[in-house]
Amino acid sequence: MLDSAAEAWLRTSARVGNPSSLHGSGRAARRIVEESRESIADDLGVRPSAVIFTAGGTEADNLAIKGLAWAAPQRPRILCSAIEHHAVLDPVVWLAEQGRPVDWIPVDAVGRVSVDDIRARLSDDVALCTVMWANNEVGTIQPIAEIAAACADAGVPFHTDAVQALGHVPVDAGMRGITSLALSGHKIGAPVGVGILVLDRDARVVPVLHGGGQERDVRSGTVDAASAAAMAVAVRHAVTEQQDHAERMTRLRDALAAGILERVPQAVLNGSPDAALPGHVHASFPGCEGDALLMLLDAAGVECSTGSACTSGVPEPSHVLLAMGVDPARARGSLRFSLGRTSTEDDVDRILEVLPPAVERASRAGSPSFRTVS
Image (cartoon, rainbow, N blue to C red):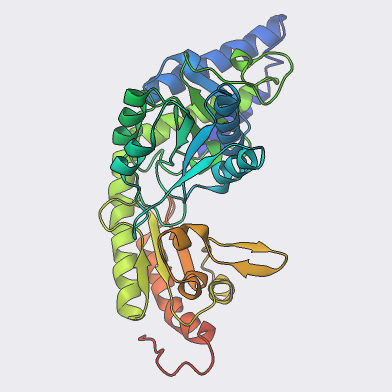
């Protein structure tokens, strides 16, 4: 957590009450919530009434997807990219199980959707289209402005999961065509357990939670004033520091990517070479099992992710890589390295030091064609 966000949380939590109450401490809490809302709205380019506090990005995604779909029963179809985070993917699958037809929007070999393809799928029977701003695994950035404009032209609500994007690339939540946008606090230095749904004031949604009618009756429940204050600080930091942060992360990312290809020539980089998050490096290591490689790197003090899920103890390849046309065997041997505000050149050097021997140990026994360079 950012020190400044932690300070805002501690300062607020120690002196305010329930922002839904009418007494003095309740009014003080309500004032903090509304000031935080106004600050966030200013940074994201929207009206304060568009900012709805949630418990995280997953709740924000569920509120938008289910709420928009339920509000348009006469428009049954849903358009969803094939590489969404499970916070989007799973509610869409759940709606499909309830009888909603879903068009899964394909991606190319670098994980990018086609705006023309989306435009061809838009019609008056589509309840919503959802495409994430930037992919959480391979880092590919989507042409959100073009997609949003196409949806606006067709009169179709558009939702985007921008959890991975804010702070790394410019995010204008108020651009034409964006109906809803999801953010998560812990990705930008706010506490775990707070998020935001940016929701156009004119959007029709059916709430997932019913209760006290807080947050425009879209998200009932007492608003956590301390987390709202911390979120406002984190959003301000993410927006104002975005360019400097992106430039530094890009230098580190490029050094890491080049080093991986130099030290492990058989490695393959995944994602877009010209439209990717500045702090993401995603690579496949042929002949390796990703889980084994992850544990070896973890033992050496390097934390990374396979980006895959496990069901009943059986490793499954990443749905993102499969949608990109990656072979399942190669997909299982892939890792994501995420660089952040505390990452340094020394961290990159350490990864490149321990990676080759870890890859060699994790490579499949009896693979004569696999060698590493150290």
